[in-house]
Length: 287
Image (cartoon, rainbow, N blue to C red; front, side, top):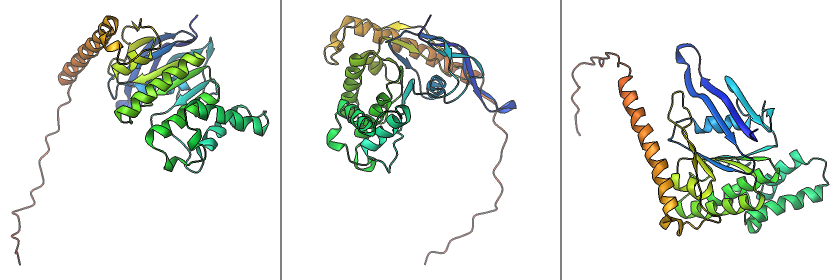
């Protein structure tokens, strides 16, 4: 039995003639301790997929199962790192991480909770900024706080919703390396949502593309058979890396072209609208 599973999951938004199918018949099995990457185009339903896994929204059909139990809402067994940081601006770095710990480990002594917060802050290299507020942090530092907060609840599954997409290239590369190191240390089951094929290959054990919607479905699974730790410079010359990159990229390009052709065939007819006749333009006097 899969550790984390989506079975026949579908999700739509709206009602009646305005109803739009986002995901249709999603079937996915995730192994315990696996780092899985879901790649796809913007607007293909990746955030909806991660929200279903987190229990933030409910599927219209199908089941989301963790270790055989149905997920019926958010819970501390699933930590989420959002794309937009989602930090509380009136709390310091320590305060943001401590808030999550107090919610999950309410029975522990206050001093132990504080030390636990410091442990995860140190894990992401932010102890020098421990007492700073989010407004005083760079984008990369804020995202580190978000990662520390997600880890601090000791979840069984980490859900990463394009956590690095808003960062500059150098900061993104640094955090990619840190996320990979943290994952190797604890080997938590993790799902990474990304639109970057290279990022997926660098971090994941397996890559699953998400076909564009409406009614998006999952494509074939691509195993990333590369040894860890992965050096981003060295793997550029690795034949296995080149093969995986070509396979995933070609698949995404193929489904992208098919989606665009289908969109052109089904494009709705535009209404025959004409601008109002406002009469001849009035002359302007320049003084």
